[in-house]
Length: 197
Image (cartoon, rainbow, N blue to C red; front, side, top):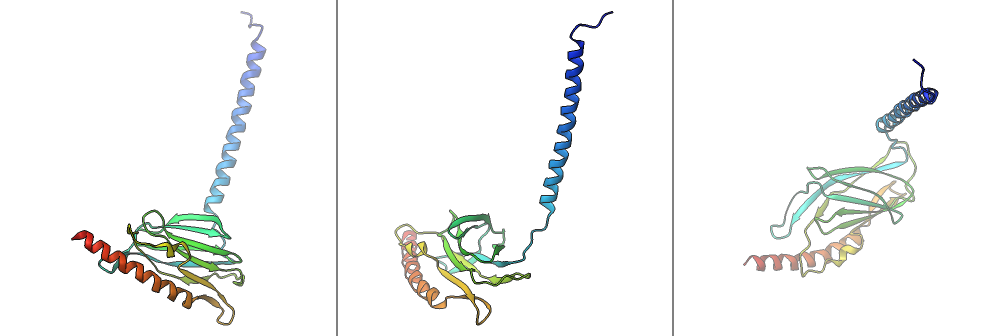
């Protein structure tokens, strides 16, 4: 029985399919290997600093705090979005940031009135072992009818101090913010209590 005239074309087609399939397998294996290396590569913390602490939910009426589960954290580096993530179920959070930049860290997301932290890390020395900054944050839910525009600006400011060789809070700035915030919280408490009857 004679082979069809176009059997050569079929043979060529099948052999090309084999080559393409082989190339796809090689590319898939290479891609998977690259992804595997990327996922398992330990990120370097050299020339970084570590921020960690616990985020709390402050009950305005009761005046008590409990850990805030999965509160959102958004970080801006030199005014551009750098990273966004959520804290743990126990309110704990920790993350590394490269030295040499200014940062604004927003705590709260859509669940809370956001508090902002400003960090000037432009003068922070580059080191192999990251410095650690510990900061607990107390958040509350916004109350309709109460002006919390104070939170449009950072609530806490922090910068490197060469004399103490560490990151220091601007205590005077924070104290003024706290005085203003306490007035708004007092008003919010009265509103919430009167709403409950």
